Length: 337
Image 1 (cartoon, rainbow, N blue to C red):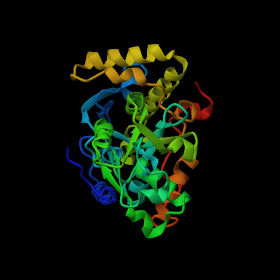
Image 2: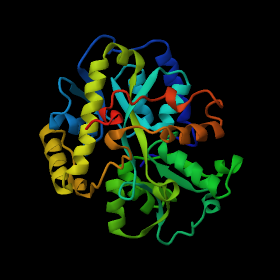
Image 3: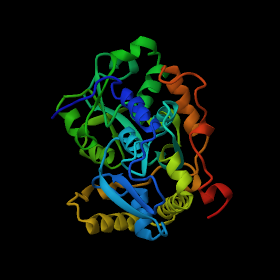
């Protein structure tokens, strides 16, 4: 099993993508369209895919171009015109915007609550019990420069590990589907596990949590879908239909019995015929989104902008939350339903 991308090396890619996007590259999305290219996630159903299946997207159609496990990569694809929209952790969105990429977040699509959270797990017999115990240890996560690395840094800072001492902890990129196996094989010391993969690993036993992002930060929406600003300007009706449809899909998952939501996910995956494993769908609980209909709150960006400034990843005062997102396309922001 190959483990790649060491400490914060991934963050530079965000800036590189911003330079490309800033040069005006807009891919095939330069004119008016109702067709949206996007990247999915193997073995799971995204909110836009659910919205499309429920008939909530109106004239908008989705064109799947492949899968990704990396939020920063997904929004880079949108920024450089390879896709029309992408979703990532809000800190990654803010960093890409601060680097000059003309993108805007329009709706939240995942978050953290008591049912949907990410834990940092060690083996049950591990001696790791506190932040300083992580010195010299490897922490596996899906990508660097995103949600999981930011939460790790906040945990370290809040527990007295600051400055250069943070560099003594080594985050590494591993595939989420392999995280549990990699931990049990002693190739890493801590594995980040969330949602379905977390519940499955806990059911197997032999692991214990060091901390979770829910324990650390409470309930919050953590990631948003973004579009390029030129695409929004040329296709406001398409962005409106997309945002409205996804917002309605969010509320559908909240008002529909869990077994029916899982049944719908199962049907969608089977119908698209990509030879995907559906065994883990039974663990779905929620998308963890805090705001009604995915409405974005200021604090869901200011928390990470502050973190990026403290880490020296963006200049202080370079951007504000208001410059990164808009709720104008979301009917729930105006009291709609």
